[in-house]
Length: 202
Image 1: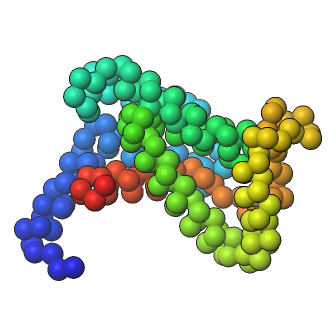
Image 2: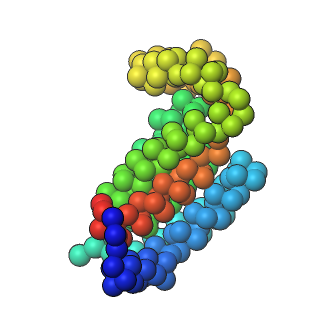
């Protein structure tokens, strides 16, 4: 699709507003730091998530991004963020840091935005998981484990743990072909969602 100079300038202006806005720009900065930390150390620092959540909660309460927004906006977003990834954490398919990171995102984006960010993160995570496994020559093993993982995800609520896991299915480290730092997927998915939303595609 050809884009006129005026349309290109308008797109750049929209992206600049996204970055310079305290809410979205601050969120993207925290996500970038979290992604780097998770990639390098496979850990997302709790102080980073806590500071981000405090800033997101206070800022979106004082400067609500929605009409008639109250403190319920960040609190409901935080709750949605916790609940969306909590089942994967209980199944040992995701780390606690990833769950807390999405909950932090919720204080910035509210419930609806957090849902879309989680969906985008899941899509990006799926793509990165395939690339991650193929890059390490583990594509065949990943395909072999896929049916069992999907079956466990569907039946996990009805199963009890066999190794002392609280009320859920435990997925051992061997069930995945490679350890993907999912904080990277959360960051890329959320930032991608923000950009597409800012440009009017979502």
